[in-house]
Image: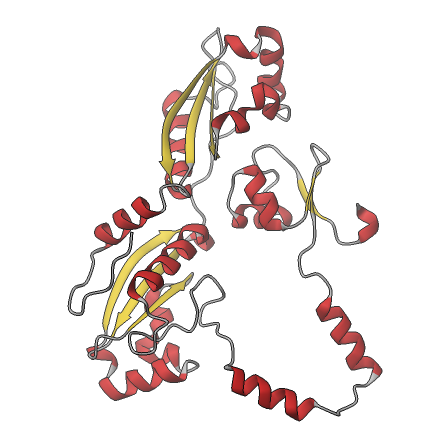
Length: 311
């Protein structure tokens, strides 16, 4: 579905998010489910993609000893499997999972198999997506993980972005329309919403906006124009590098992503992002586990493989 930004028409948070979810319905494939044993004990969880892939005929719960013991005792087919709600974004899925666990008290050993009540979002998972609209109707779409007022800094937060900073100086920060598209969302949704707004508003077109890319990278990130890169290459041509510089260049050319091991199952994922996708969680959750802030991710113990021989 294509729609172009109309000058003077600003979309509310509800409109933008509803439209966004409609277009990204295929990607918004998280679901919350409940498994109920013949004795009435329940397990509540959430996943992404096809439910049967997550359930794996009961083999996807080997790390939960109590649950696995009853699966072996009763047989997977004797459990009742219900999808509470699907088509969710990750924030909605995590929130609904937590609420369902609390409502069913499935974290209590006598009532269920969940071993704890999931925590609410931590502060570093609260991203925001915003739009800046200038008097000439040109727009900038941004994403940030810090409070918007601090990010904006009365316009001074854009001194490192020459074109945006020049526009702010010409019209005055007070004359820039600031739209809080979505706040308190996780990185995955923030990136998708940022890219969505950049695309529908065509803000990479210099006549329409100030975005230098399609979004998703570090905020404010952009690539130097071809002319600048050519000039830099010309300056370096014929210049000899020292052994130390050569070593640094080789290190920089090495793979940036280190593999992640699922210690519980022995499976190795090629990167943190791959681990997050396989486990049906966001990258920040995997990162928290690798840094020791979380003991497990859905019951799995994860560690980063620092050296080739670790494999």
